[in-house]
Image 1: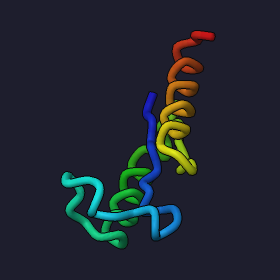
Image 2 (image 1 turned 180 degrees about the vertical axis):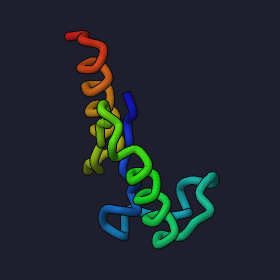
Image 3 (image 1 turned 180 degrees about the horizontal axis):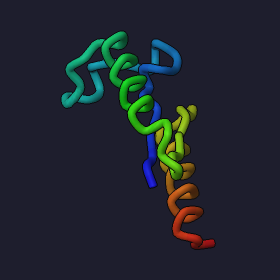
Length: 75
C-alpha cells in the first residue's frame, strides 16, 4: 500500500509555515508542487490511500492508522 499524506501546504495557507518544522526548507508554492508530483507518481497504484488534511494533526494520524488497519484487515 502507498499512503500519501497531503501536505499542509495544500490546505489553508496560514497552516503552512517554516517556523514550526526545522526540516522544512521549501516555501508554500514549492511544497504544493512537491505534493502534486508525489501524488501523481503514485496515482495508478492499486492500493493508494490519500490522507487529506485535517484540522488537527492527531486527526490526520488517526485517519492514517484507520487506513493501515483497513489494508491489514485489522478491526
